[in-house]
Length: 228
Image (cartoon, rainbow, N blue to C red; front, side, top):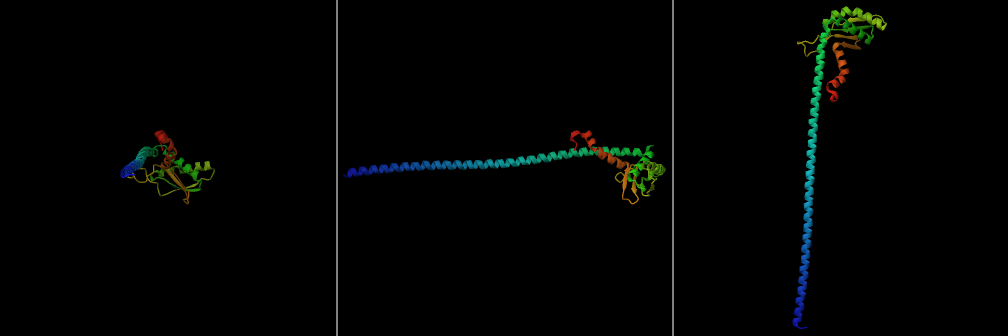
C-alpha cells in the first residue's frame, strides 16, 4: 500500500469518525432538548397546579366568609323579628294591665274580692291565714270577710277559718307617680300563719298566669307559623 492509499484510508476514517461524532452530537442535542421540554412542561404544570390550588384555597375562604356573613345577617334578621314580636306581645300585656285598673273601679269588684278570698282559702286549706290587700281595698275586704269565711267553710266542710288582715299593704295601683315602681291592680295575697305557704291571688298575678298559658295561642294568632 503506497502513501496515497494510506492517506485515502485515513481521510475515510476521519470522515467516518466525524460523521459518527456529528450524529452522536445531534442525538445528544435532541435528547437534551426533549429532556428540557419535558422538564419545562413539568415545571409549567407544577406551577399551574400550584396556582389552581391557591385559587381554590382562596375561593374556599371567600365562600366560608360569605356563608358566615349570610348566617350573621340571617341571625340578626331573626333577632329583629323576634324582638318585634316580643315588643308587640308585651304591648298587648301592658294594654291588658291597664284594663285591670277598670276592674277594681267597677261595681262588681267587691264580689270579686270575696271570690278571690274564698278561692285562696280553698287552695291553702289552713285554719288560720294572713291576708294582705291594697290600702284602698281594706274597707271592701273587711266588708266581705265574714261571707267569705262562711262560703269557704260550707264548700270545704270545715269550721270557719281565722283571717287576719295584715297591717302591711300591697302596693297601690299604677299611676304617673309610681309608673316604674311596684304596683298592684287589685286582689289579695293569702299566706299560712308561719309564712311557708303563700298564694298570690292578685289581678296582676292572675293576668300573668293566663298570659303565660295563652302565650302560644297569642303568638300563633298574631304571627302564624313564624312565631318562635
